[in-house]
Image (cartoon, rainbow, N blue to C red; front, side, top):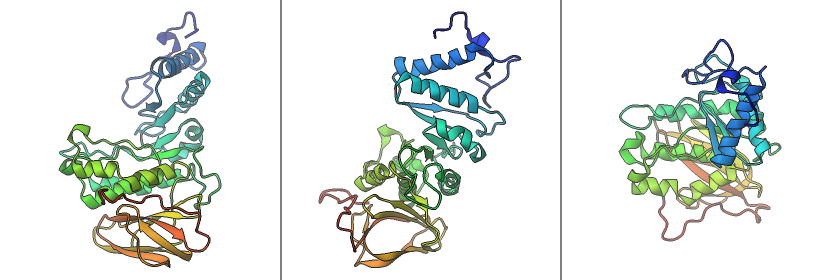
Length: 328
């Protein structure tokens, strides 16, 4: 693109060496003007010709079980895309090394924190792969939200961890139980990253469709697009994890998760009384209180909104089910 005499051969580093673990791309010779021209041509193809809204860069390293370094290419492509004037969501994959976050975060909108969620077996995914997402996302939360859950610097201008595809729509083929589906969907919503289902859309079960289109689930994901949730270990009590999403109106969304293989109580304490609503069922959760505690089944969760009693008049419920809606 606007580079007379440049070819792919002229842009490649010599001797030829692979640029990723698949060996299907070659490293660039950055001392040659043809390398920058190649990157501009890629950006032009995706923005002007394909008019893409999302670009996933796979097998990015450091990460992707590879020893290479694609940081310079990612930065160059990001700048070239920006120069086209088209907004393109850039997603990096997979298992990006958190130690290289400073090199990647300014140039991508989301970062795959893990390997594939799929097990490549007789079903789409297994619970252990879902459970690993809780820990694998944590090192990246500081780049989408200030560590500790502060409201400062916790907004849509920052990127998001990418938890991979949400495989919850095909019944037994999903490989997870109903409780595990809700836990996976709740975490994906609270993180606010890319929401992509790996389910076969031609074989969605009624319950799978109800989950993927559920008003409470989608409302939380939209809210997390402005500020992502973070674990609140100081307020959490019991044998699980408590993820807190602070909303601008003063209310909070809490995801309480039991990652154990047996029933456990999980709860949190608050500084002042609040009223609460289950965002999956839409049901109220009792009279005002300054805390909440529930017995959760193995691998189960509850997704709730806590609205302060004092000064909470401006806070509204994220989700109110219609009388005919399907409750989960």
